[in-house]
Length: 178
Ligand SMILES: CC(C)(COP(=O)(O)OP(=O)(O)OC[C@H]1O[C@@H](n2cnc3c(N)ncnc32)[C@H](O)[C@@H]1OP(=O)(O)O)[C@@H](O)C(=O)NCCC(=O)NCCS
Image (cartoon, rainbow, N blue to C red):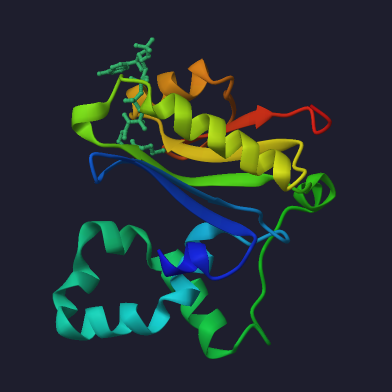
């Protein structure tokens, strides 16, 4: 959560009903290629992650963690060398198409409140933020088996634009002057 609040290119908001959080959403505006939310959060919370692993070292062999080894190793190197020698492998065609956009990083509605319009309010406020940042489009990734989320995004004009492993990248375009 602190990562979201650490600079003004990131944001996190929530909706309360009867003093209870019933929905939340967070995003950011990447500043360059490779400026991803997962890497950013990992770098930001590096010390906490190390402490966590020291307390529960067996987690290193957890299947989910094992799948993240390449990502973790890349970020550990970045952290140790403080970006001096860290390289990011990027496709040259991606560099030329990089454009300012807002990334939707997290969104959730409390189980008791799903299908009751909370998502509508979250999406509306997210769109406002994206426009405030003068972004002409927004992006998110969603697991391909998360049908409910995919259907929900489609209702709000998000479209699948790319398939990466077991996730879809979805995009929503804005008219910046609107
Ligand atoms: C994704 C999430 C934020 C959507 O909010 P929601 O209130 O559930 O969304 P809605 O019910 O308004 O819309 C979901 C749409 O999916 C469809 N849907 C409903 N239940 C579904 C189900 N069980 N399976 C597949 N599709 C479903 C419907 O088309 C529905 O729209 P409609 O009924 O209004 O036509 C919420 O389900 C959630 O918090 N999920 C867990 C966290 C999560 O997956 N976040 C996204 C990570 S990328």
